[in-house]
Length: 460
Figure 1 (cartoon, rainbow, N blue to C red):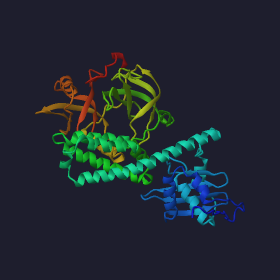
Figure 2 (figure 1 turned 90 degrees about the vertical axis):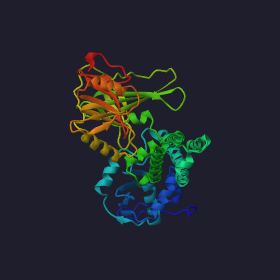
Figure 3 (figure 1 turned 90 degrees about the horizontal axis):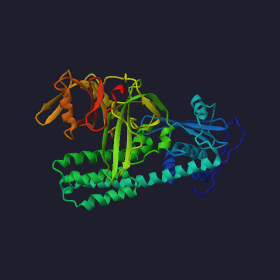
Figure 4 (figure 1 turned 45 degrees about the vertical axis):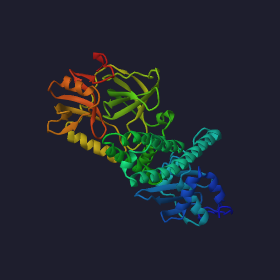
């Protein structure tokens, strides 16, 4: 019945002003057809409760498929909307759904606005400041993002079927697949704006043909399937997990957006650094781990450079930087950008690290519970012994607990040499299976184990 004009008349008994709302008007507000369809379905569900109004405002509470309840308030006279779901696009499905219910049943219960509705209305307007032109630009960006989400959702459905087919035929059959089998489907994922999924699938090709690669292939397939399931239920996830699912599928925020986030002011120790080659030709990356002195918070700076081009800034392992960091939104925020920074010459006075490996394991479990797709976790250990056992190097704490060290690179041998059989303070990057050692504290100084030049002595 969308082609007909239905008038929603607000008669609460408290205000005789009549507001005209139609399905056509609501449809025109929708950022994209995906949000509109979800709003339509939601408008017929029994998840709405406590819908009421006072002649000017309309409000209600919508229960999600989980345990959350989203609160929505609408000022009908000037089309101001607020919803605490914090959706990436505007208006969200809750706002549109409540309006649809109002059109179907305009005689809502009269009442005074609850405190939460009044509080939501005090928050910054959903539409951006800067006049009509800015509002139009934001609306255009919202529509384009919604269109991308529609394309991604179609790609995710195709991805799920492909993963299930791969499992049904057995992983041994994947070993016989030609390179075009993997590259072709990866290209389809790129077309569906699922660039991160495409990169994983290209890696499937190497895993399927490697010795003992089936176990890793199955693990990667499981993670990707879990991610696709999360993406299919994006709107019902808590906001941090929504952000994380989008990131994992290849949606990245612009630097300008990140720098508008709240910042953490601190003195930051450059604890470790990893450099490497990207998938594309001539692309290099650098991962720099920071540790806050007062906040005890870890942060990751991720930089890229093409060809012989240098990085924008040099971060010497062991040096300290004073400044404000803005973190990328996510389920367990680690990646960050400096809003401003300057060198700090006094010694760093931050924490010494996890006292035991049990403490580290507890912290990692908490991080993984928040973000099930976490690939790299910072690990600062206060006192461990490097122990070589056959071909495997371990870090052993005072309780005898062991942590495996990655067998790649020269850093593991430098770790043994610096220790000389004595306990040491070590920092590294944990990937869930092994620790890549990046630096140690030796003679009161933070020293890199591989790459990342050490700073002058008076800087730490």
